[in-house]
Amino acid sequence: MLRDPAKTAAGVPPPLSIRNMTVAYDRRAAVDDVSLTIRNGRLVAVVGPNGAGKSSLIRGVLGLVSASGTAEAFGRPVDAVRDRIAYVPQRAAVDWDFPASALDVVTMGLYRRAGWFRPITRSHKDRARAALAEVGMADFAARPIGALSGGQQQRVFFARALVQDADLLFLDEPFAGVDAVTEQIVFSKLKALRDDGKTIIVVHHDLDTVTDHFDDAVLLNKRLVASGPVDDVLTPDNLAIAYGGRLAKALAAVR
Amino acid sequence: MTFLAIDLPAVLAGALAALVCALVGNVLVLRRQALLGDAISHVVLPGLVAGFWISGAASLVAMLSGALIAALLAVALIAVFRNVGRVNGDAATGVVFTAFFAAGILFLSVSGAGSTNFDIHTVLFGNLEGNLWVAAEGWGSLLDPVALVELPDSIGRLAAVLAIVLAAGALAFKEIRLVAFDPIYARASGAPYRLVAGGIVVLTALAAVAAFEAVGAILVVAMFVCPAATARCLTDRFGTQIALSAAIAVTAAVAGYVLAAFVPLTLGFERSVNAAGVIVVTAGLLQLAAMLFGAKRKGYGPRGAFA
Image (cartoon, one colour):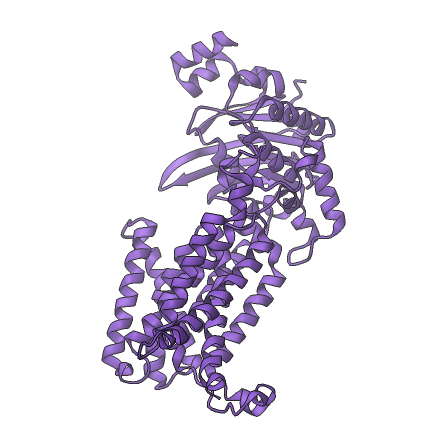
């Protein structure tokens, strides 16, 4: 489990390597000079207090906000390997009152493969239906997305990422405000993907469940506090740096 | 043949203008940019007048170039207000588009364009009734290429813009849907986001400019928003919504014109009322009816009730 990161770097290029990334809004840094490497085939939690820049780091990597520094996936600039990357934005980022069915949204995951300005075919729709079935949503394909519960909407978003067959997945707060069934389905799919050799990076708000479900963790508080295997990262000292003294002690006690 | 000479061109211009604006309006409404249509249709006025002024006639090229320059200038100014003046986005947009519209009104009175058929009344209510087809001699003229060429220029312009909008919509249907629903995911998956988002703005400007002269600012703004919002109450499918909005726009235009042109005369009033105004009121009433009786509301009730 505790492989030397340098050894990983020496072989195949890592799925994600971030160098000196800074993301700033209105000249205030949300992510401050973060460098880290993610190892292949790991389920990684990005944790830290509110406002620690967890989502901003992901958005910076994906080029969704302007950021300085570099991000490489599989040894190449992110822009060059977008077909190997899937992204599940925060559920609150879109208007769920949009006129679309669950199947419409999942099919969006295949737009890139179908080709821009080219039509969607029946086989694309079949693939999207299969992905809905994988997350227990087979019966909801035709349902307007506005008529789905929060957890069901999250599973639709997740299925949209699944159809991409990506090697590197980013999920931004996928468990925020979802039901227990959704949480269980998504976690078991994530583990299955990890066992298939995919790398998954999850912005996660719940420190308590990190040890149970994740292999590695990235602890942020604008700056990188620690990155690596969960047990090495979530130490009382590191938590004290990220969360401040008293809260960290309480968290350590819970663990 | 007063119907062919007077009513048909006016109805055609009104319906085409409504259709063009409504089709683009779907995307604006779904992207929560309904006021972009409002802003653009105001911002282009000084450009239209300047083009009219400089070319000395209602030249399409001059007026379109003027409108485009005005729109680009406005976008740049809004950026300056936000970044240098640190005014927030909607306030900056509000300031710029009202200032541009006011400048357009000023140009109108200074340029003397107001003394021709392009005046403040035209700006607000358009000149639907001014669309005449003097070459119409009978129903046979509808099949006569020579007579058809004599149809008002504004109809040709609107038809050309409609063709562009339909072609763009057919080519980029799924990309437009993606960008409208989830712009963040669109960019993350490497979609041609700037092309699509920029294209939407350009099509909005084209639709606004083409419709502006025929039907006026009020109808343009209403048609960007009303048919799409009405259709939204009736369906939960993207394609259906667009088709419904088109049908609603044409219905409002035709019904509104008929109501304006014939009903007052039948009731014994001396003159017909302004068609653009009645069309907008008709669209508003259709919206009200859809909100009250919309199928979508009936089926699902409040969000999540169906789940």
